[in-house]
Length: 439
Ligand SMILES: [Zn+2]
Image (tube, rainbow, N blue to C red; front, side, top):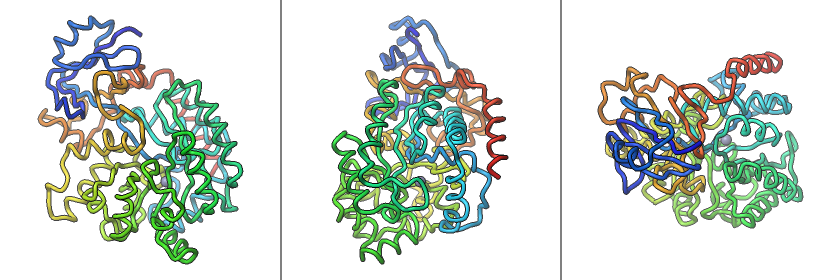
């Protein structure tokens, strides 16, 4: 594809050098942004082959979901919404995971990717794959950016990986993503301090560090995890991970609900990023508003962003909704509406998320950066009208339409509200068939 100009009433670049631009355009070519500015000037300067967008549109960086269990997509509405985390895990999630064969995982991942793409998500961090080929197939068809991480734990129940297998698993992953030419990158996901041996966590960190990858660990996510780690080691999960030598800038802690002040300081010192999954946590009654220390984390300078977690945890696939939920929680908790702004809501799914995930240039629109753009036609969501501050509209408004376009690495993944190259109806039929067989 030649040069494309994406035009909007607003371009929300999320770049310090470019605040919200009015009547603006983004020119893209060969996967990169090559122009950004007033629409007429950009179009004149770049003489595009194609112009999309226009009146009533807002152009934003492709959104980022920093923690996604794609495997769980089929179970989004299968488990009760009234069970606590331990029962949820033992009685529902584990039997579901154990029942998923390679085909079911492929269907789940494809449907997850389709759902995310239609919401304007261009990049996600996979929380843990079992059948790698299922994810590679889905990513060939739905061309999102991804950080793929194998599910690593060495409890006996399910898909056990021993420490001496980590190199082989990482080699297989590294070899496999070559075909995506940088669109898909790698990480490792030792699932948590209570489901992995210390040897497995250390080995995952060693192998990841050698290759310049990050590790993504569920940490202080449930009370039973905290209790199990305390009874085994006498430490909190954060202090325990620190004692293993794995807390640093290339470690990402997921959930981080049950922290004390000392944990917060240690996370801040280490430079580790934190992914909060607020809708998931609140749905399971984890007590985010009572136990969470998210304001303290932010004020301590910890890099923080949001994830949607799994379908049957959040029952929502919108990182914007997750970000808004966290913002409202923090405004209310602090009795201070200034505790969180609409710009900060967007940053939780764009700039901050790209820093935590470790994908350079993602989450902002900047000349020379990756051409990952989402276009929303505000006129399709009546609740976002009349036009006013587009950042507030996206952060808090009811977006009732799919993204009009999603462009990832310069290619259309969603065009005119439709997924490119994917028959969504056929995919949904296949998903329903797989779900019926699982019941
Ligand atoms: Zn998770």
